Image 1 (tube, helix red, strand yellow):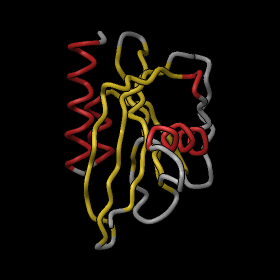
Image 2 (cartoon, one colour; image 1 turned 90 degrees about the vertical axis):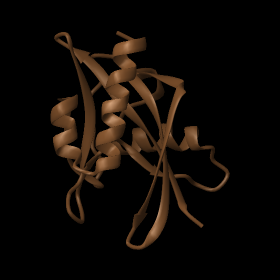
Image 3 (spheres, one colour; image 1 turned 30 degrees about the vertical axis):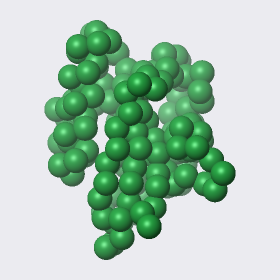
Length: 141
């Protein structure tokens, strides 16, 4: 059975540019991803996404708006075991919100889509970031 995780693809509008939030892992290959984490027993995927975003980035529910109709699922293997990650598109609405990293991450960046894709590296995340940029341009510009 696949491990399940959930998180948000969070973007902000900064000087007319859409930027995505990526966190750099403190361990392993120090990869860059949006905030996400495993779903706890009895928790919905959306509840897990809110909890993990708060734990990993210090953002609370009132800091951003979630587009619940914009949900995406990635399936991949981690160390030979299947993993499913559910993401929702979300926009930072509190420009005074500060990112506060947990010990799981060592750095964060707000990046335009192309730079975010360069940092993310994995094809499925690159495709998802590009898809989110397209949706933002078409529906939320």
